[in-house]
Length: 408
Figure 1 (spheres, rainbow, N blue to C red):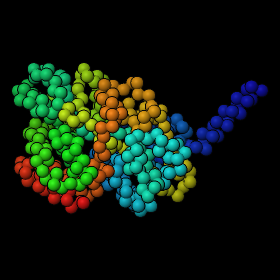
Figure 2: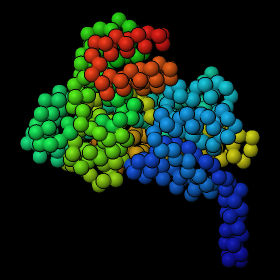
Figure 3: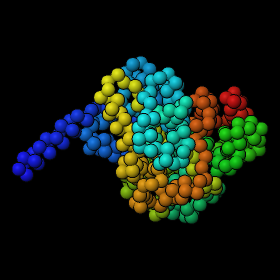
Figure 4: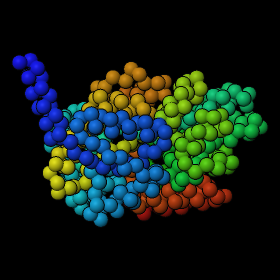
């Protein structure tokens, strides 16, 4: 009887698993070593639940992947799920009725009570309905330093951006690239944003980007930011790599002193088996203004006429926000979880710094949340031109103010 009962139980489990065995193609732009390790945790959890993750990685970063993803969705060839950043990137798709409403999942799982900060779920909400599942908090405003590079240059590891700039001559004399910066457009934009808060401070950033105060945008604090960005482009003059993770590798191997990059760089250091605080140093807010911007990644689920696929989409949405997946994914990704009730005892020194800042509430929204995609794209084009040319800081500053003014 016991054997029969076991066989019956096994058969029932097999039938239940088969009933939920649905393939979902998931598109994203996580292709570096650290990113691939992190996304593998999502796939493993989804496959273990009985469904099948069909990986649709698109190389080249978000700027390459997003147009492809949007074209497929608007062209009638939707994937099961797709990554976007928090903010307005998918707003037009939601407004066009092309994205699945996840409000029932969010309510059943208690997302409003668990997701922190609340702005992450607010960024998924349109007209009171929830359309995405946030998976992490990424902040781009970190300075990553090679302890080896500074040791070989005979100078102490800097504790802030000003000390880093002052150490540049010693790095160059030792044959090092002071600042690693890839040639992808978004990297120049990210570096400028990080320098903005580090040099001008949180109040100026909020006045410009949240309050849309163009007098402050045109003022002396932002003029100083453009001067600092001009210094950064000189420090990065010999950085001849393309992708962000190639620039990170220059830091990992001690060929470069540092890199301004988001906390996802941690994933690359972990893959290289480097220890935070020993092999490398991380400075949130470039060591000048310690804060986090609450951007990151979320998954949206394009509408599909197949009820089985829709059911699988909702299962995946719930899974992405679950405590176990939040821990497994974010420890590999280098990002922070979107819920505060998970155990991150295994976090390294850099992640602990981020968690302390998050707990302290020293936060700003990401640029994706405060400016339209059009304004962001125009500003990015300008900043890339500035960082890759000899454009005068004052000229770039004036053009930047004009672009922001057009978006008010």
